[in-house]
Length: 155
Image 1 (cartoon, rainbow, N blue to C red):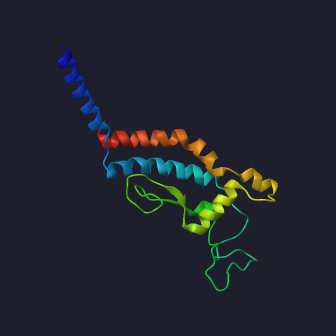
Image 2 (cartoon, rainbow, N blue to C red):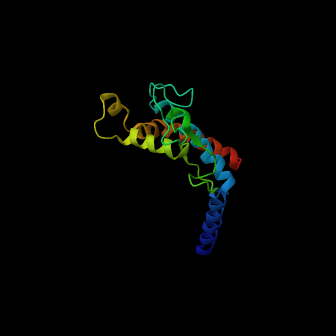
Image 3 (tube, rainbow, N blue to C red):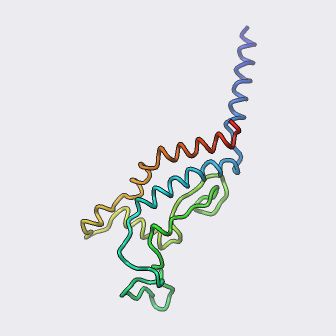
């Protein structure tokens, strides 16, 4: 009887393991669905400055530094990006990173999120917008990933 129980448990374990393992492509589909939900929440939570970037630079400011190309070309909200299955390093692993286009936008987002010295009340209010978006999107991300997982696994 013990041998039967051991064999049955092993078969059950192998079945669970087979069902739970995803290929990187399948994982990319699942994490991509969660990234879509998170990027939507992040877009809503990201503060927008009053500057006009339609001309590629701020109104009334010269954003070139010693002849270099201007960094201020769009609002942070407009620079949120992700590619299903790819990390921030550009590696295809099935994991999906959500972030901001370019190093400059990522740096600005970090300053806005974490704060700096001598901040105004408006800037203090905007702090931790990334964490707020994560908390707001948690249930939606799980729902989107669960639905995509069921679809990918044929459940």
